[in-house]
Length: 155
Image (cartoon, rainbow, N blue to C red):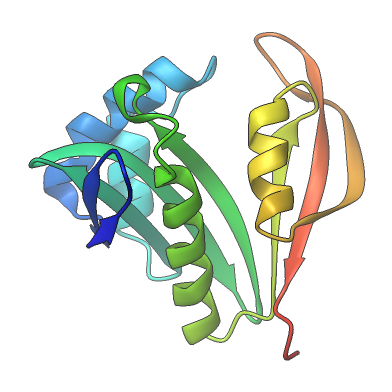
């Protein structure tokens, strides 16, 4: 259980029962959201970890990562509007990173819209650094992506 001045929330591993609520958060947060089927298919894969934040029995946010060899790629991080600004995304990211480390990851990558300043600040606060740029990476609207990387300190 994570505690802060505003909310108490719990971080757990995602399972199939969370998909409907997660897809709703995804649809609200992203212009090209994953479908419920995409989440279900991804969750069934062995090399994927998704963490879910719960507030009073409701999904408040989630974070996912693909793992391959000693690297990971953050797929999605989103928090439902009523629960934003409560450090949920920060906690989800930290828990996800720690679980990836436990699975043998030494570095983690992600892409983020170059206009998504709050997300960039979140990742920089977690010690991700900008290592690349992907032109026209996103659609709806077309936008460039920053490629960011996190490397565990003891690697």
